[in-house]
Image (cartoon, rainbow, N blue to C red; front, top):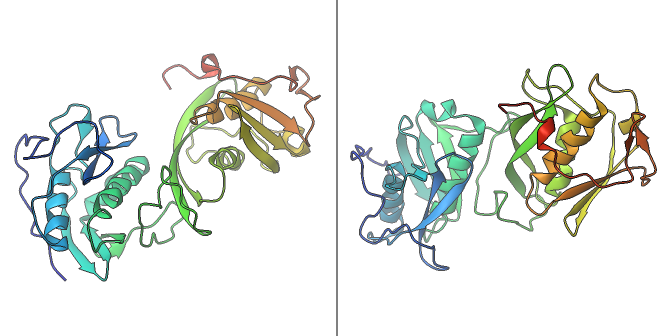
Length: 305
């Protein structure tokens, strides 16, 4: 085991350190992953390694990820209040142990920090898997289960083929407001099987309902998902008759566009076709025909969201 000495951060360090340039990232070469300024994505930046040997390189990259990038469009990977206590590299498994402040990050940011750490470190020779601990204890997911070793295939934008691989994504889901006449956007961190289409995950999460009090469900919980497929930009959502049953006290348009707006926030989806048991000749809540495709409706989203 080798403990990483905690480095004092240099005030206003440059984003470019002898060979680190904010330029178009080449197909080959080492990349350091930072968070964008809004903490909604990770951004790779090319970097020239100066050290020699896996442990030296790991330490070099970790120090860089603690530094403040020069670019105003990026933010440091490891938050200022989070301290790296130690690291251990053994048999291609790298364990990073952080201070308890790591747990103070909101879940969406934590997932991005975790993704940036993993994506950066797996580029090091002799590092195949990453484990993250807080004060010696392994971190847990939103369900309270221990998050095990991770690699580049753990995260949403790297499509792995392993049968039991888990993906982690931040989804924009639209639920009802308290009155049931408008939508509110909730960013949700979701972990799911890699072999399940993210479109289906979105619909299932909408049926499961919101995780925060100021949001309200739009789809009856007994609704079953028959299928969700996407072709030529159109997402076809086939639900059973539970969808048309008496549900929550929300407008029909709110329910429909909770699905439509959530799905059209995904890349490659421009419209949504709703079906009930494979049929479209349905009039939902007496006044909404499902025989048409629906596009995103920003007007139904509560202002300020």
